[in-house]
Image: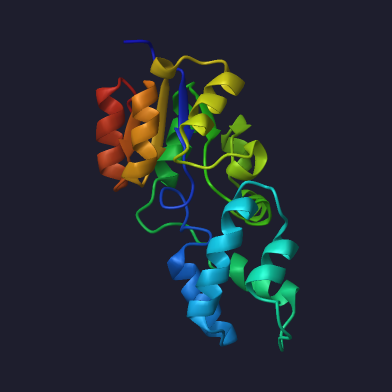
Length: 204
């Protein structure tokens, strides 16, 4: 087995709450009194290009929300979206901090997130200093679980798959990484994460 050199971290569901999942969307839709069914139908059309960086938040909101007059502004809607982001209770942030302080490993992010929310979350929760590389969907133009995003990450980092650990809360995102030869860990809680890392020789 190749020595581990690099750990790729998901953000939503591992370090923070999900940035714009069905729970957050439901809360914001309720806050503004929108028709949830209509919003979800429109969201489904434009979310993929938004998360891949093809369209902006303004374009996303224009299609999903502001296709008709509203009593609130796009800026107000975006701020409410951002407010849904919080540190994940019983998440992996403490493990990340200890890993950054003591492991000597290269740490990078590999996540699905739209640019405006991604940039906000990295800055608001002071995540940037922990990572050397940011393989976010909005920057690389690909989304998990597309196998190409994992290969793109290896190419950018110049690592072999066997050197890399990938941590994500969703099995469907871990599976393509493991199929490529990465060491995939599905995050459930910090103790479980530390146990699985220890099996790979990473003691946190």
